[in-house]
Length: 113
Image (cartoon, rainbow, N blue to C red; front, side):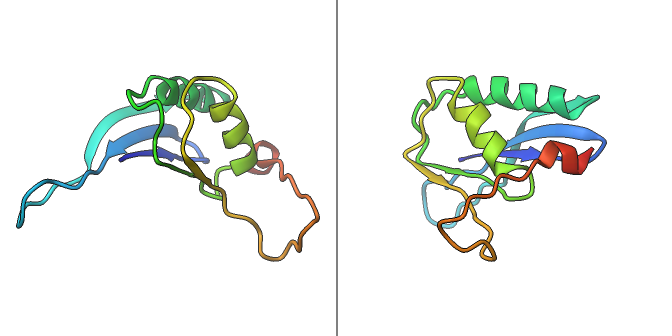
C-alpha cells in the first residue's frame, strides 16, 4: 500500500512510498519512493498532503492509519473532508491517559511552531 510520511519539523517534507506484496514464492519487493516534496512551511506541507492524497488512483483504500505524532485530528479533517477517497477502516490512536468519554483535541500546529 501507499505510505505517506510527513516531517513535522524543518525541513518540512512529504514523501509517498509504496510497499506491496509480490506474487510468487521467494520474491521480494523493496519499498519504492514514488513522490517527494520539500516545502518551506507546514501549511504548504499539509496542502501538498491533501492534493497528493486526492490524486491517488485508489478511491477506497482498505486502511488509513494516522500517526499520533502529526496531529491526527487535523489530518482526518483535511483528508476526508476534501475529496472522494473514503477508506474502509480509519485507525486513529488515542491517548490512553485520557479516560472516555472526555474529549481532547490538541493543537499540533501550535505545538510544532
